[in-house]
Length: 151
Image (cartoon, rainbow, N blue to C red; front, side, top):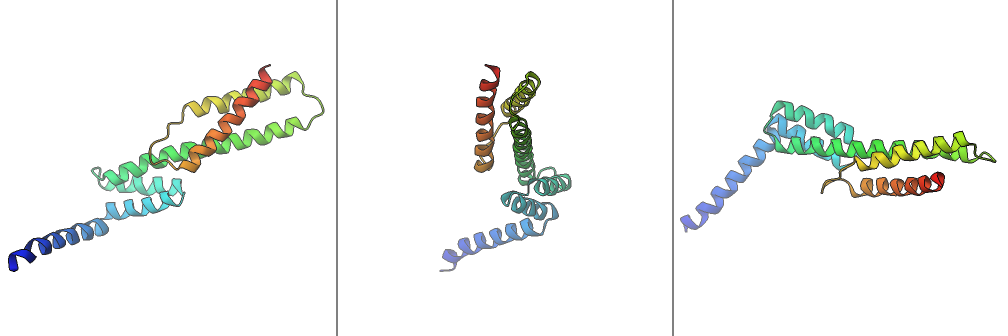
């Protein structure tokens, strides 16, 4: 009877030790906090915490992964914000009764910047799908706009 309980009890004790180490170790504690911020969409905070955790323990793979994912997500956020800004500026230009050649050139340039920026983005499996879809939506809008302006 004792041998039947020995292995499950030993396994439980080892798992408990690993969990305590994971929660108590400063590097992994920061990694868990960074993961939380990443999941709620606070990519800047997640990146900073993951970077701190990684500097405490360079073998902390969780910190390295969160740091890389946060960096990727921040690129998407930057792209989306830039696209929104250009779209607002283009909408202001579009309120004019007629578009001058200079206005067309500005719209074309802004569209080329946004379309070219999308090519540089590289999503991973765990990149937030909403960010990827929103970036794709803006890319499609600016591609259509670029087609209209270059005619």
